[in-house]
Image (cartoon, rainbow, N blue to C red; front, side, top):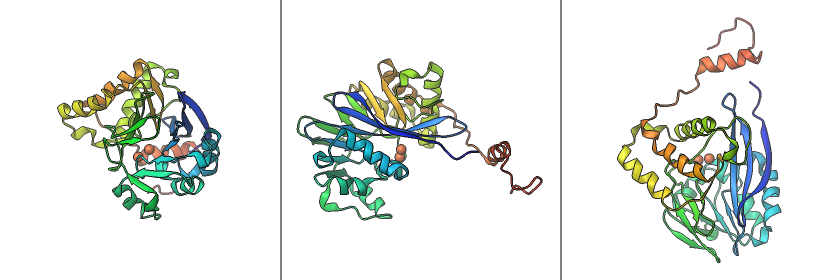
Length: 279
Ligand SMILES: [Fe+2]
Ligand SMILES: [Fe+2]
């Protein structure tokens, strides 16, 4: 099995003064996963999530084609996973006028790796608004998440919702818009991503889950930008919420096991020696 292929980091406008910073990684044998961040270039520019260390230099270059470092006023950190917080200190260093919107628990979890400068922090919990000059950004926890500190961000002026790890999907090849996917790929990808991110889907009470998903859907989201999905808009927004709503009743995803790994290694001609023990 070849090493994962990383795709270019590039800015992509998705709404008025709103840009996805998009790259991605190949994930054989299921295709490709996007890895995105967001920039809202309003009166007080906001960077939403800080990318992964693997592409730090390219990610910073891409961000600063959209906004000047000294103009960045806010950094909204959805949670402390490395694909979201991986360039946080580099970004804080590059953007001296930025305040970090985070949580007490996220700072604590990141203390395993670095000390976050708390004098530059402001705590923003689920459902709390933040006045960012020409709009009020609202912190809204998405239904599917893989880290307890997770909060998404909703911009009512553009109706863009940063869904963090909700709506994660594999795609057959890199695409920027979900409209570029066929119906089957869109459905199957949403159901695979949802189960990967939230293996706890099987423990959910359907009635309570309906309320949880419905509360976010009813914000009036027109455009979904997420870390691991092409942009979702139009009728596919409702479809994505409906597929997420169905997760409690969907069979668990069968994880790849050692048999799969052995097969991939054999296929790549990477077994150490013919007949060598495999375990
Ligand atoms: Fe995560
Ligand atoms: Fe993620």
